[in-house]
Length: 368
Image (cartoon, rainbow, N blue to C red; front, side):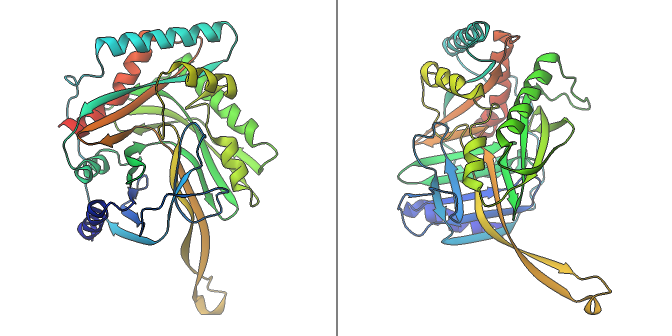
């Protein structure tokens, strides 16, 4: 039962032992991985098994929670609405001025030919006294179609989020990734209408992913562009599928960071971010998720084969998500991270409003 899993996770927290509790998009299963000691483990080639979380900067190896103990429980939570968010402050006047200045600087660099796109972000600190597991339950009820998690290591910190973006999903020797770009606030009973800026940004991300995977995968295919909903926001998404051959580390290193969280060309955009955002992203816009977990498949043979007997198969799967819509906890404070893609046609005022829209649902989850 879910309450039993939550009780075990609370026990880990009270003992100062690492854990992660999470639910995959559109799933009813809540899973937890509990580590038996407080060692900081790392993955170096992505051949290990467990739960991995990696920073944006890539200056430290990804942290691994080994598969010491795994728990699973069914969650019957119904989707809930947080109501109106009009009175929630998305940042101070000083923070707004600083972000507008940063966006304008990014647009100037694009005009000067330094890069075509850069993703610029900001952080927002708010008081938070609610228990983290209580906030997680609200996230699960609010973001049905997102990867929702609470991750903790006493020597690293506590992070929570609800991200709609897959970095990579593998099953044996096949993989799926996605390009995700463009943002609109949901208007109930209306489908989004996308402008040139959003469509261009989405195409840039899709083209980049295809190019970076060339020569590393086989049978590369992409879907049509679709509108997907995450909380109170719409995004544009293209699925990309392919086959691969035991080079998972190479593929992850090629995909991370994607243009959706960094920019393109990659190196000059990343340099601009590190030099001008004036804070360290840490795990925001990094990635996290299951690594090389075993999954048992039960299948029924055809009636032509041995009297329709069932058989079992074991597959190895990894599901890694880009760490968006996330926050870091410390004492009685939560630090939220929000950003957006900047191109030559970006409007700084609209870019600020996009970060406000992205922060509202998370702020409601914390402050309601």
